[in-house]
Image (tube, rainbow, N blue to C red; front, side, top):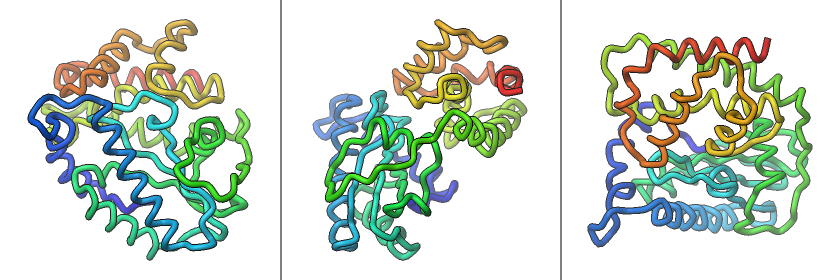
Length: 266
């Protein structure tokens, strides 16, 4: 995993305007412009990984919204996956992190590197991201396609009800008590509103999908107590790459969204 402390992400977030709001000629940017820049950064990191790893390199891939769709110029991470013969160490991760900063200071903080050895016995590859690799990965360079063990519904649910659910509930509880929204918290706040849709979608289906896919599914298969109108407004905010301040008056509903998901998994 690339080293991204919370404070570092918050500082870097102040400079997103460089790529997310304006293109090089001064005209408004689009999701495609930033997506192309993100892929260009990923390709350079791929070449760096190949050079550093030599014969241990097996493959470098786009995953996440760059692979399965829904990339947003302001709110999406740059998810990439690296498979090697024996895994990587902290020195390698720090070197790749520094290189990303040098190549693209405005995008580097958004890079999230998932990695594993050839047996998927170690590394950073939670079940849903492993499923994303299996179903959606786009190879930037590949020496050998490594077959990852596919997580079943039980493994996915065990994962979801653990740290992801606990951390989302904690963030939602904290945001619900705030009197103002710090500009540095806007991305986290919007993600906190959208997370119950993707959580419920993956819990029910055992699949990974975009925010749009999750909302479409939940409209067809409603979850008792989940406030869909609010989820729709949060998704519209994401599509527009807008500030989520218009959703701040709804912060008090976050615990109710948590309770709806808690009921779903009980």
